Image 1 (cartoon, rainbow, N blue to C red):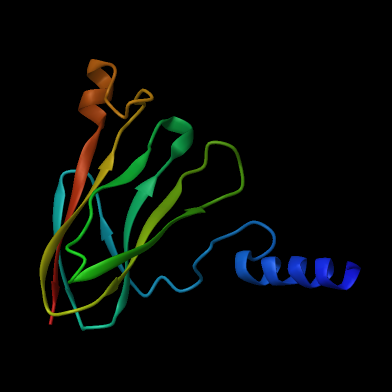
Image 2 (cartoon, rainbow, N blue to C red):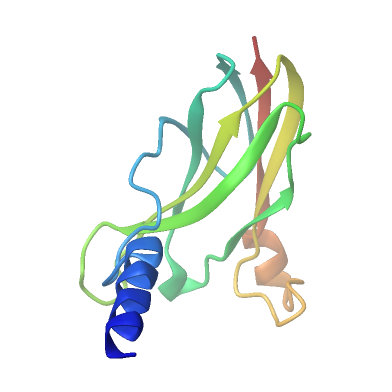
Length: 141
């Protein structure tokens, strides 16, 4: 019985990984975007890619995927965060990782809801001004 329990734990660790850090180690082609911009992205079929946006959760940045791609063209893998520094208040980058699939075009929209409430809606006038979308027009050839 102990041997089965130990084997089960080892299998779980192999699947989930151990310790902190990113669930995805390969971001593929990284494409940077920002609030208020539209970025054209051209990819090959079967290519991994990441949409990267600067963030700083300590000041209120909260990026999310609000318009997923056409699943025939690209598939979402994960959302990853990397800090520039370990110190409190340091900013970083959020990566939205995808795989391109079949030829075609799709749009991916990311939204930074700055200091928003639980319902992901800006709660003040300043929150509305600081929030915004980054749009990525993806074409797979």
